Image (cartoon, rainbow, N blue to C red; front, top):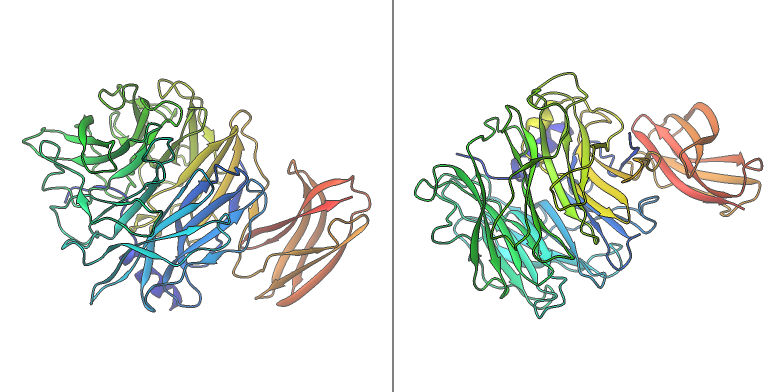
Length: 536
């Protein structure tokens, strides 16, 4: 009965990803028993060890879809307890989270919170000054009734971190709800006072660069260049403008008051299967204001692939598309659900969902997640790196709306990625991976949060000879306890044993271990939960 409720809430109200025509060890961030998906990942530029992941999940108190967050202050090795953002209305539903860090370490998080019949709610923004430990009272950026088209779908947020007079400006793009029929247009709102107030909305498209009458969900991807230019990429299909589907760039130097428009590209090889998550994303090079990259999914060789086109002149002209995934061309294997980011050195990271290890073709094949890096602004890409360590089976839940995006970041030669899949069962959970861009090695598997086990406590820490580990299970079950070192090598293990529900305590002799940092792992049927301790 519970699972039926979840499906209704999740897949009626979660948002579609984009326009439609009428080897690495992974961390289970959410371990939700019902639905947790569409994660957004952010790295604090003022402290790159501070990471935040936010996602959509079912609240076990209100039983409505809500926004959950977790943070790390050691580069993803350990994670704090999860936060759950409160709903504005008691029976409202949340979705579509995104985040942006200001360069001083303040993070802004946008999401939708609303209900239907009567239509209420809108797009909201909260902020945190302590790395995601706590969040401010929500500010309504756009009301659901502000436009006749119910603009509550996919609110992307971005802050200007340039050294120009535009610095600190917040931008929020959104589009009409997925059940609103075309024609639709993308919207922009602006905050010039750090989320205290937001401007009235304006349309992003304009004469000669209209979205057209046939695109139901014209998402606008948002970025800000190093010289303070607001850059918005959005789709178009209008015969009077082009016989092909196109992507346009709207660019503004005056905080969205006026725009210049450019054509990013066009394609005649669209992907007809609407099951694929056809995300697209524009990003700007933080050290070169003339360089941008636009990543999307195209069908140029008979199956969906990930392509990137770049510009070196601020968006006036764009390169030919470069295929990023390096599996054989035209093999029927599909890639989708992409994400991209530049790092502070100008390297470009692209990641996506990939089915090359499944032995099958098409959308319904089992999947992994991969990434690739470019050091020459998208001209060439490195051999693909596998981010997931287990090929996830296909489940019909993946063909439902929602779970449309993954997320990534590249920091100090470390690749970070977050995504949702069903590796641990028939329900979507959020996973986190961290890998070296050079070696592909990463962290040992860690279960960040479990509905069956609380965070593990270790006493004393640090310790010389013996540690006492305490954990609470809400359901009695078998578990395996291991200790691994920082390289992921197992150094101690206890046999599988049934542990009862409630408070459990065990003593471990660690006298034989050399001094250093270790991870205590509790592995149950749902995954692995970990905490770090020190042997003196």
